[in-house]
Length: 97
Image 1 (cartoon, rainbow, N blue to C red):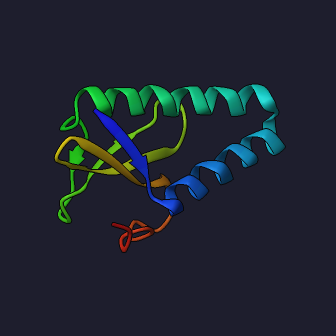
Image 2 (cartoon, helix red, strand yellow):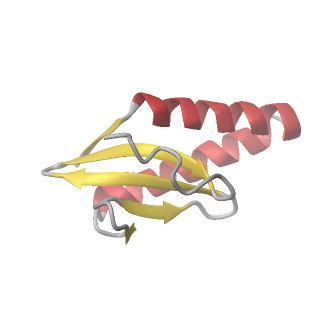
């Protein structure tokens, strides 16, 4: 299964990596990216794994980091819409398709 990213999700991910690199160093930033990639691989293998939301999206948390990946499974593609910090307003990114 293939995946694509909303431009905003790409920005969310880059912002999080920059934050971890700046605040804790390259090692933690790399671990964050590794965890994100692990979750993305899981989603690609098991698209219905994430918790369904009312808006037809799915949400899955990263392990060890306070972030969740919000995505939509359409046909044979995973569309990553938001990489959201868990303390961020839950409606952040709701308008992304």
